[in-house]
Image 1 (spheres, rainbow, N blue to C red):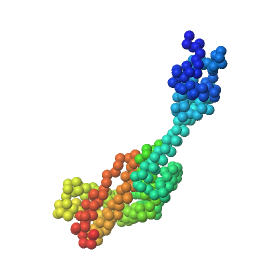
Image 2 (cartoon, rainbow, N blue to C red):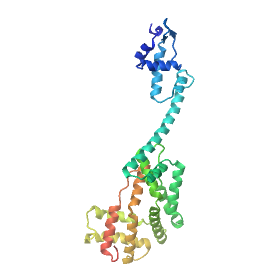
Image 3 (spheres, rainbow, N blue to C red):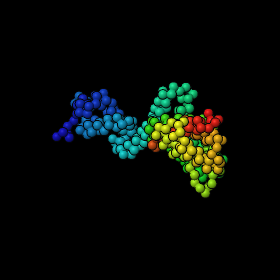
Image 4 (tube, helix red, strand yellow):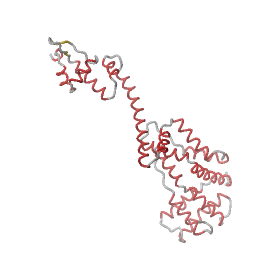
Length: 315
């Protein structure tokens, strides 16, 4: 019967597809012990050695060390427990490799300096608590102290908070690194702070009993159709659209729709149209796995141009 047969190292190697040198190596370390010896003193193995070697090869290919493998095949360790621990270790390794891949890809694409590369690496390695502190500091710099508009900003702050998943894709890590760099930029912080202050001032002037849309949203809704229709912002056909969103702004501030108000509105829209703000929102969507936001830059460009041709002093 085959179960009673004994095999030399060469025969065992042919059955398992391993080299003679490999089988001898495992045998020398006691992972696969010989059952008997031939009259000439050569090691002989039973059929169970084939199964042990097949298991050893599979576990080695999965990355387990020989010490652990020996304990598994000798049933000193539970294979499911070993597999669970190894899977967890691999998950950590995969995450580290993803972080490194994302940073090196960003370095290659951006032509980063050594200093920028070091910063990107540090940002990619931040823990969840460290990421939350970094973004919390950014949001506090932007919205802190605007107490009158705090309820209105609570939702905005939540919507501007990145949440990198536990096992992010490479593009999510790249987006997080760029977003974190952006949030540390003093000029960008000042730009977003100015937008928040303008919005808070508008909120304070409006009738709190009557909910009213933010001017950027109103311009999007009221000027968007004109842009879609291909209307020239300098043409008479644009007049009703301009009148609509300037009237909305006048109601928002409780002021007449005059030249000064339109100058102020043009400045406000140019501030909101900061390309860095749009980039932040695009990166945020990637990090959080959201649908990419629609670009409002064309609507704001159209609206500012429409105000410019109708309002003295708007450049």
